[in-house]
Length: 83
Image (cartoon, rainbow, N blue to C red; front, side, top):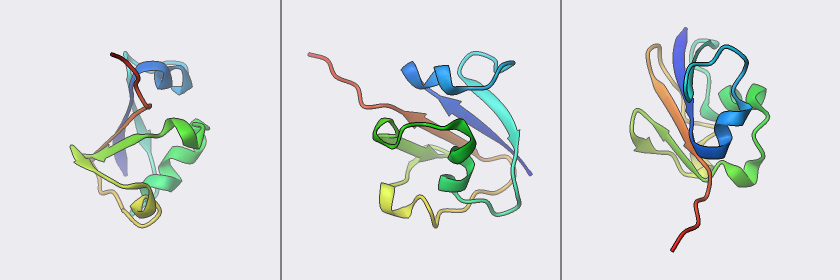
């Protein structure tokens, strides 16, 4: 199935060649979980601060069990400091 993965801020550096802006369309196994989908991107766990599926926050303890369906969008933001 096809989904969209969006990586924001410094995480965009982990997108494969050919990605447009901060997004890439990927083919994943039917019913793949958030955690499985992120493995090929080799994101440091400490940088996967905010994870959303279709705009809904997925807490770290639910990422291995939260399954995506065709057409979903998985978005990840790193921790952001400012002031």
